[in-house]
Amino acid sequence: MRIEIIREIDKLRTMTVTALREKYLEVFGEETRSGNKDFLWKRIAWRIQAIEEGDLSERARRRAEELSSDADLRVRAPNGALAAPAALNTSITATHAFQATVDRRLPVSGTMLTRQYKGATIRVMVLEKGFEYNGKRYRTLSSISQEITGSRWNGYHFFGLQKEGAAA
Image (cartoon, rainbow, N blue to C red; front, top):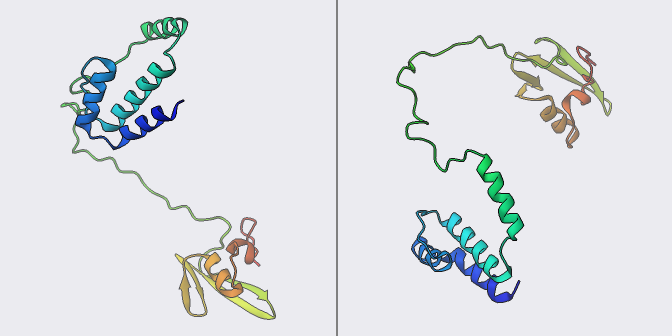
């Protein structure tokens, strides 16, 4: 593609919608109903390239026409199609029981996890929501293991909880 065409296409991106509509009229020979800037510049860019490098072959045009004649295409949804039906009562709310999922690798709350690390015994209490280590609450075991080691660890792996119900 020639550099002049590339520059002309780049210029389209900075044009206003009004200017793009005028350019559309110039390259297509008809007015557009669209006011969407992205659609207009892309469509005009395609047309400029098609004029410069050649359009679709006659065979490709026939095939596209065959495909389009088989499909029921709509440009827009019918009026009122997206509105809620009048018969639908929107004041009714369905409720469902929710059961929180707990990671099965964790022992029940109140369990003390222990681990030897660099000669020190690490003790972590499993709470209903989170963990307690050295009098401080943590949301995850990984944050505790990171504080202890100074590097990122998988908390379950650090405390030996890889298998269901296994505690170190």
